[in-house]
Length: 154
Image 1 (cartoon, rainbow, N blue to C red):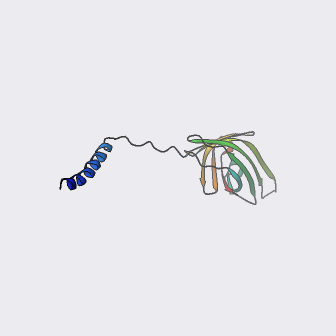
Image 2: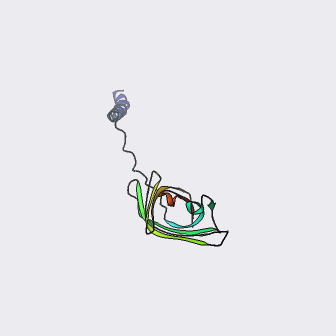
Image 3: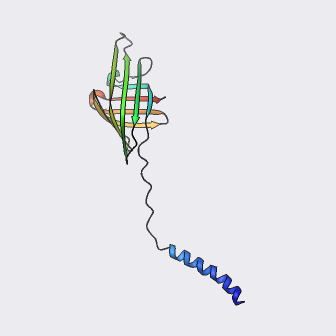
């Protein structure tokens, strides 16, 4: 009987010790590292353009056509940067006059949705969103460059 009692008690004592030893830790585990901003690398075609250059109208192909090539470096913390080149061509439907905007430079984007671009022609700041393969960039500064461009990744 003593042997049988000992066989039943030993596992119970061990289980009690294991449970008792683990209960004193009240610190929460470290949160996982921030995921960083999305990777926007790729070649994009213009879907639509709204801004100062369009006098507030939303236009797209065939009146406005464009291509953007974006190469993003691996992110660090809450930001990532890379290079971007773009070419926009806007044709005035009334007189056929063509306005071309070509620029290339570097960009920085952050997890809070902010966007900065430093190009050869202009520098601008604003916000961005990436939903699937659709990149939307809202330029808010400088006033002469205020625009919203919607791009489809190829």
